[in-house]
Amino acid sequence: MSLLTEADFGNALPIDGYGPGFFRVAGEVRRGHLWVMADAVGAWGGFEDLATLEALAGQIDLLFIGTGAEIAHLPKPFVSALEAKGIMCEGMATPSAARTYNVLLSEGRRVGCALLAMPEAGEARA
Image (cartoon, rainbow, N blue to C red):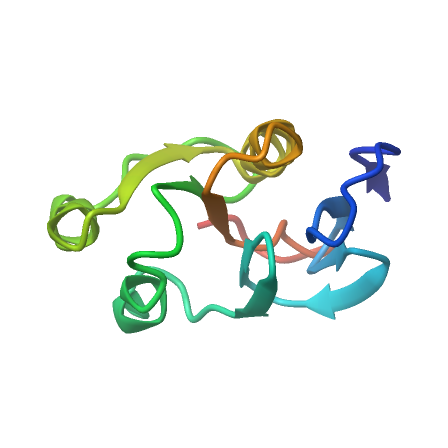
């Protein structure tokens, strides 16, 4: 498992680590794709699950999208829909998205992330 931080985030929910198919958020292991912001975390169904992320409008200004083990282009309709709700998004590999989220979270910024889980052993990469 890769550890991301040992900083004190108060009551905010940092991403402590990740591994094949899971994340550890504020000490709790969660399996599969997820979204996280300072005070909430939940399951995310991937790019087809736009409504889950649109519901974060007004609570965050910037959303990091973790695209898995490697960076990938975000679908234009996905980005446009989020921007229409006032959520700017930036795609990057999942490990980078988690680390960047933690840094901005520690600065008190209104950020969130939606992360595709890292592939499990033997799982084909998309």
